[in-house]
Image (cartoon, rainbow, N blue to C red):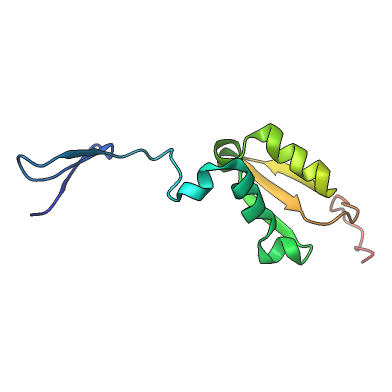
Length: 107
């Protein structure tokens, strides 16, 4: 028998079956529920290891790690980040950040 979806908050099986609540704010994997593991996973990505940039949704950072823990980890690693329109761009190196201007880049 096919499940029926109600308002995307519960999954209801056929009559007499157990009702399952769906929690979309809970991480899909249990290890993502730990802020330390989430941060370790973020900063062990290939781009982060190569000293490039990583982009994450501000909402996800707050949900999985917490803003204070995220900023503390940035400071510990000597990295910087910028936020724009709900997206956080993390510079996984300590190279200077220069705003884009009409002049040609020096690098």
